Length: 314
Image (cartoon, rainbow, N blue to C red; front, side, top):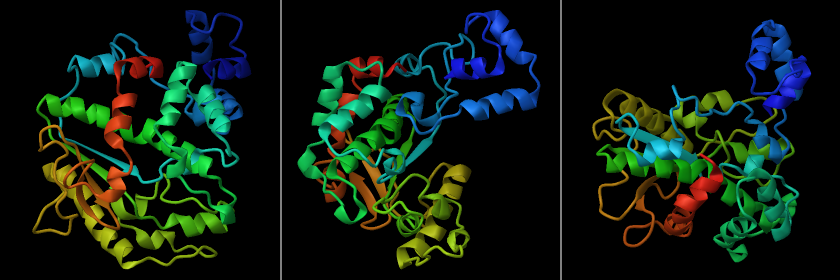
C-alpha cells in the first residue's frame, strides 16, 4: 500500500525502505503528497486492508516490539480500560455478494495473507453455517452474515479481549460493552443498503448524546424508548468512566450494573447495552442466551492462541 503512494508521487527510483525514498517523500509539499494519498486510497479491495493504509510498524522506539510481544511481557501502561463493539460491527464492510463457503474462504485468503489455508478453514468451522439465516428480501445470504460475524470477531471483539485479559492479569480493571441498539438499519435501507443491522458507528448517538443529529430530511427517524434512555445513560457512563474510572454510578444517569469484566475467576463478563440490557457472563451460569450463542470462549481461544497471533502478524 505504501508502494502505491511512492509510485504515484514519483519517489520510486530507489528501494521502498531506503533512506533516499524517505528523503524524497519529505521534500514533497503537502498538496502533492496528499493528492498521491487520495489517488491511491482504496477501501473496496480486501487485499488493501479495507483502506487501512497507514498501519504502525515496529520502529525500536515508539513501538519497540510487536504488540503481541509487548502484551506477553507486560510492557504496557497500567490503566483502567473500557472497550466497546457493535453486535454486527463489520456488516457494513463485508462484501454483500458473498453467497458460499468458498466465497468466505476466498475473502479471508485475501485479507489474511499470513494465515495458512488450514487456519482459514478452522476459523470458518468455528461459525457453523446453520447458525446464520439469509435475508431474501435484502438479497443477503446466510454466508454473508456468517462472514460478517467472523470479520467482527477478528477485528472488533477478540483484539480488545486479548488486550483486556493481559491488562487484568497485571492488576488493572477492565470493562467490556457490546451494543445491540442502533438507529442506522432503516437509514441504510433508504440509502440502498438494506438488511444491515447494528453496524459500525451505531453507538455514536448514545455515547455522544446527540440523537437529534440523526433526524435528517429524507431518512426515517423513529427512536424508541431504549434509544432515548441510552442517549442519556450511555453518554453518562462514558463521562463517568473518563472522570472516575467507573462507567456505572448509582446516583447518576449512567448504565446501571456495568461492572468489571474479570471479577469472577475463569470468567469474562460483558455489559450488553440496548435490549435485554445488563452484565452477562460469556457462558455458563449468568450468561445471556444471545451472548452464550456467540461461543466467545472457544472462538477467543482460537484467535488469541499463540499460533494464530503469529499468523495475524501482530
